[in-house]
Amino acid sequence: METVDITVERRADFGKGGARRLRAAGWVPGIVYGPKRAALAVRVSALEYERKLAHLEGTHLVRLSAAGSDPDLHDRVVLVREMQEHPVTGVILHADFYEVDLTSRIEVAVPLHFTGKAAGVVTGGILQPVMREILVECLPTEIPEFIEIDVTPLGIHEAFHVRDVRMPEGVRSVSDAGQTVVTVVAPTMEEVTVAATAEVAPTEAVPVEGAAAAPKKPDSEG
Image (cartoon, rainbow, N blue to C red; front, side):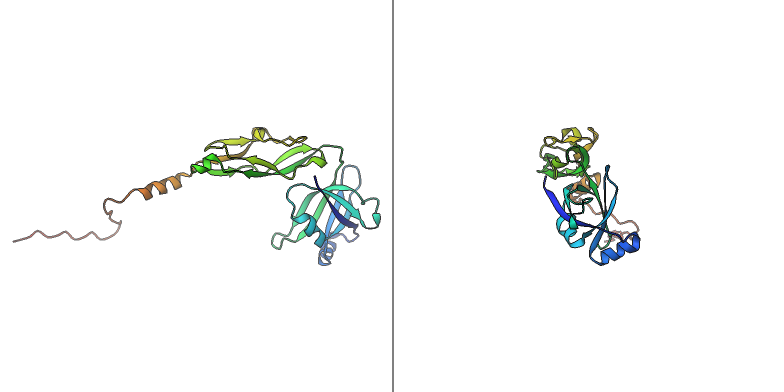
C-alpha cells in the first residue's frame, strides 16, 4: 500500500476559539493518538491536507513529518481515523490520526467496487448494493485500496454475501459471513402495472365521474 507523507506541527491553541483561529489562518486542527503513547494536539496545513488526503477513498497509511524532527511526532505512521467536515462548505474542521504498529494486524473498513452488468439487470431487474464497504483484518501495509466484485452472474432475486467475496492475500473478512453485499431485485409492482397498462389499447370510452351524461338521441317521429 502506498504511504502518504504529510507535515504536522504541535499546536498550543485549544478549544473552539483556538480551532476557529487555526482554520482562519489556513490550518486544520487535529490530534495524534494511539495505544502506546499519549495523545498530542497538532495542526496540518489545510492546503496540504486537501491536496494529499481529502480526496482519497478508503484507508491509507500516513507517515508524519514533524517540523524540527520532533521525536514525539516525526516518522510516526498513522491512519486518518476520522475527518470532520463542515456540512455546507465542506471545509475540513478536524482530523484524528491513529498511530498503528506495522507488525500488528488491525481492523479497517475497505470500500467495495461493483463491476460488470448483472444478468438480472439485462432482463429488467435493478442492481441494489446493500454494503458499500466491508470490515477486514490485515496488516497495515496490506490494506486494500478497495475490493472489486464482479456482479455479472447475478440474476433477479440472486445475491452475493460476505462469504462470496474474494479477499486479497493476507486479508480476512470480519463482517458477518451471511450478510448480503449486493443483490438484484425485480422491478416494483407499480412499474409492472404502468408498463402493462401502456400496452393495452383502449376499446371504448369510459365516462369521467361527475361529468354530464351525453343527451340521448330522440326517436324519429317520421
